Amino acid sequence: MPASKTPGSPSRRYRPDTRLVHAGVLRSQFGETSEAIFLTQGFVYDSAEQCAARFRGEDPGFQYSRFSNPSVAMFEARMAALEGAESARATASGMAAVTAALMGQLRAGDHVVAAKALFGSCRWVVEDLLPRFGVASTLVDGVDLDQWRRAVQPNSKVFFLESPTNPTLEVIDIAAVAEIAHAAGATLTVDNVFATPLWQSPLTLGADCVVYSATKHIDGQGRCLGGVILGSEEFIQKHIHMLLRQTGPSMSPFNAWVLLKGLETLSLRVRRQTETAAHIASVLAEQPGIKRLIYPGRPDHPQAATVRKQMGAGSTLVAFELDGDQATAFRFLNALELIGISNNLGDAKSLVTHPATTTHQRLTPAQRAELGITEGVVRFSAGLEDPEDIAEDLLTALKAV
Ligand SMILES: Cc1ncc(COP(=O)(O)O)c(C=O)c1O
Image (cartoon, rainbow, N blue to C red):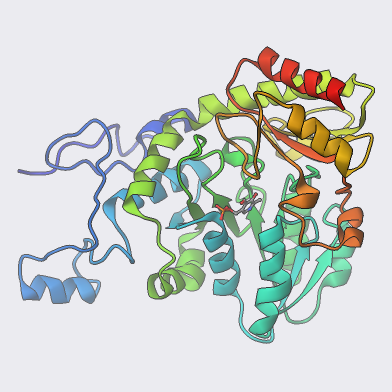
């Protein structure tokens, strides 16, 4: 049986919401509607000659699922189509993507310039792991462009940032940092998890590489871990391809299938979650118990002009500081009935995080203070519940504080 027709016309560039549903489909001879899960480690060949040709790269097709797999390839192609990237590689988790993206570009003796406000594990990779392999780093205040300029050394090879930052939702000017990186002969890698592919496209802003934890909005339903690295074909071939193939932080075909299904609803979910987050931000901003409220979609956001310049909309997250200490924050978290206490985000279920005791607990109190992560800071991730039920839960918990 020959392979069935794939959806759409190969010559048309469909709009993003259409790409989220159809891009990258490899339909088998059975003509399935939903993408197939190719739950196989390996592949067989028609002949020894074909096998040899495939290993020489002369025969197209799959060899072994550590290298590539049809379900994973569909996820990669759909992500690339969404992001406007020439190439993508999937990984087992977001941290595998970040680690591979950085290590693939760096050699002993190189230097990294990174924003201080990184997710805790990303900061560990930069500050603790890379030095073991002879790679030094300088951490800067990401919104201060002079600090990026001053941090440049002759051996600076990679700039790395996330924007909006975790958890205080600072927004870094990606185009400006890309320009500084390129002038220094370095590349820029952006962790785009908090923005989502819907609201920010770092490659079009000048970044060379984008990484995601697909665990967050891309799955969006709390089911599986995953990550993805995107860039030009040349970038992926030069820095990423062999590292992933030979070291094996591969995505499982089952997870790729879950994430393909997640992508189909990404746009609907993220739009609704963003509307809900904006509503929650405006409700919380009026409350006396809230000392500081940060939401990238509000005009009072410290980098509102940068948000307007580079993001399509605010965020699905809101950060706020309760007027009090850790005990106050814990009383608030414990009084929530609907919203879950978690370190995750981007889920269909609304979640809250206390960064000082979870995602950023490894930092010293002084390092946390520098990033504005006080004991009263709470990060809220909007889910898909009725926004009024979420608001009522937050307001009831505030009264209990
Ligand atoms: C900004 C950011 N980058 C990377 C990661 C790592 O992703 P994963 O948990 O899928 O390894 C996370 C969350 O865990 C994150 O919030």
